[in-house]
Image (cartoon, rainbow, N blue to C red):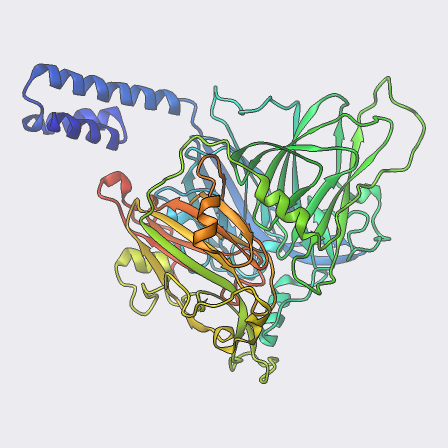
Length: 612
């Protein structure tokens, strides 16, 4: 029977029936001695591959070519040169089905280093295609540098997106990545009559690369964007919260619907630095997925979405068809004393209907929450539950307490505009301000087995000092305010279960931080205000139907607990998706070792893998 189990495991591990038969022929001596066991093993293998071949019968190769270069666009009454893909802003939408292989040839014609991240794609055994600069690859060089990203869509359905993962280029280099169920599967909710992709973003009237460079030279946060966008367009109210005189209905995105029908809105927050409220006047939503993970139906009239996150929401077109309605996005500010409150709009119109009125009526604007309405934001984030297909792992191998937030560090010599008295803003996790390597990507060093000089394996499981992380006295604790710099990773054994308490701090003010983990979806077991207390808060864990995410918005002055299984070999960064915080060091990385079988080992890099 032991031999039979070995044969079954080998059957599951090989890629095709032909490969199995070839292996079978070469290993006759190891087959079970009894004919019954032999035939049983053969039948199990045949069934495995027949089922697998059936599931993959309709799989396709979805292939695109991205030419990344300069594009001149008109916004807010002036011309601006941006970096864009294939002359489009936002960039091309990629659509695939579960089981498909996605191949994207990237040609970098821009003047900047470039990499593309496929946000939320699990990249099982394809960490080389993940995309974060100097983590999974060196950048694609300017002047026609190329790299082909190739990855499989495995067990994923819903709304994801892709974006640049170098500098602030993500402000304009992004697009939707839609994963449909494999035929003949369908959604776990009533099929909508139509779909619309809503990409929310930010806009600057200057080069975003210059915006980041100025911030780093000063050791301070970047200048605010001047407008919000919906599908790349700036509607009424788009310029810093005031009416934008250069905008008109013709310059806004417009969604036409038919009364009585239901539409799936695929909402993506592609903004660099701001969480957003989203509403449609006189309409409500049923949230059915978040970060391409199905949720229990959640009814609401407002959606709150952090940078990096996606929300799939059903909207019933049941309002007066004789009117037009604004959909609006507005900045949510969790930081005390913040004043930036930009908003923008798009139009929702009804197709002509016999019952509709011919009278022109004013377009209705939704009543938005206050820009600092943390109660509404946290209620939305904490209310989602998961429509789970897999159970929550109950046994935990590794527990971590990771404190994170903003602090200070002495000005570097290159920071010529930095205030030498106050120092530079720094960000850290467990008091380590993450520094990207410069000579080789983390993944290449990992694969070579030669991390020396690139990274160290000593990221701490706990902060160096324990005290009131979120209290008013936090800022006075100078020992925690000053951070150390390093490129430290946490090494995980293959398939171990990890629980991380993410504790927000208030050194330079309490702020909601969206933390994104590459390579995994995780369960959000609990979240709340103040300091995490294991004796009280473990009892509040949702181990039945927690939401799954790849990006969690950790409450300002609060905490969240996530749990995941490290079953994907490679090096995976976890970082704040407020892009202003990444270059200041609000990141760390997990190094996941190979597993014990061939199908749990990261393959070598592709031949065109970019080198530093």
